[in-house]
Image 1 (cartoon, helix red, strand yellow):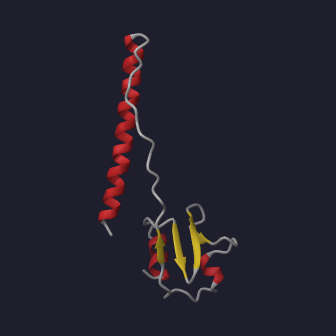
Image 2 (tube, rainbow, N blue to C red):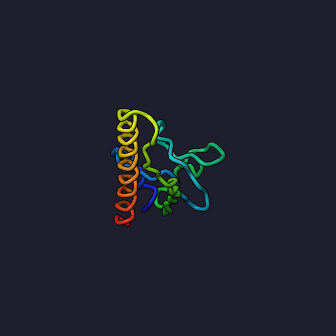
Image 3 (cartoon, rainbow, N blue to C red):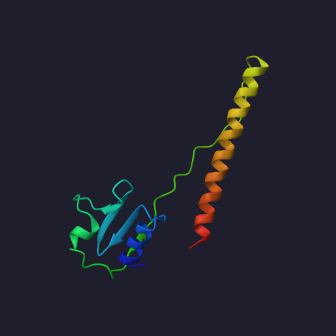
Length: 111
């Protein structure tokens, strides 16, 4: 993908990568300002005075953290309502984590 393609995605409100690399510089996307900034607080177009529209963009993928193991043990002590509430919370946590895994696997399949 070229810088111009990336700018078109931003202009069209499409999803763009959080981190990119252009000509040995790494930039982070600022969703509020709709710009990519480097570590020197310069935005992508400012650094090269707009002369980079045909430069290739390398997408830098964020590391996906592996979540801690989930325990689904409801406590043996307490009333039945407390046990049901704990079990319900655990089920929602498992659902959220499984959905994160599914989203991650789907994003890998798009490459």
